[in-house]
Image 1 (cartoon, rainbow, N blue to C red):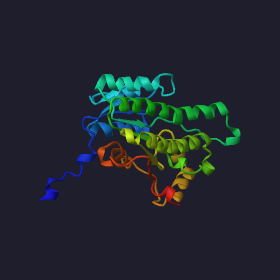
Image 2: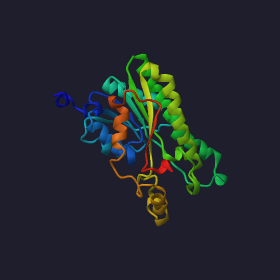
Image 3: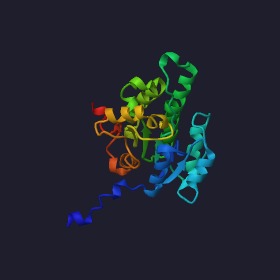
Image 4: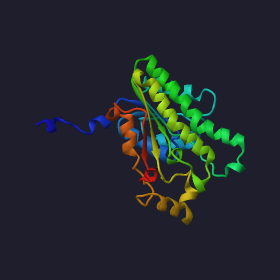
Length: 259
């Protein structure tokens, strides 16, 4: 009789929650926007490409498009204010916006390296702080999910991604630090670290025989990830299903980091 009364899927729902999602105009973020709204959330979707955002939000009343460069002064406040004005609350953040440059460290330009850190590390920090401040001041629990990477766990080797690896390694440990600071205040902070999923950012990698061989040969499951295989991890960390989980980096990588 007890089993008949249980709904094992209910904790993963996001009904009534308001979430800010950056980097929503393409790639993983585009998928995340549809996922979160389908799970019942109202979502502020943000990215620099306004036309793509408008197309994403068209016909979906749960999506509010707010074009924004996450590195611009006041960007974090703009996104927080948009969520409050539209939905009256903030329950979650998905820090997904990012870039990646492929080049040898010896050939790198320090200003370009610095800009990569601004987008991939500093902007997520600013948005996390702005959202957490509202949650704490209003005594509302919330969940912040940073999008990390397997390249935040170890070096890229032949890939040569010094800025990206540095930023994602920073995101992983920033996740732990913020979680430890805000846990008693009801704000959980975790990260999802994807392995190889095809996006615009890594299209060159997937578009060559050498790139695909690198992925397949170094992934124990022998293949890259496919659309939908990050859904469960993201819903878990944003929802009450993970109410006793904070400071964790959840790798979804086909075993990449296991070896």
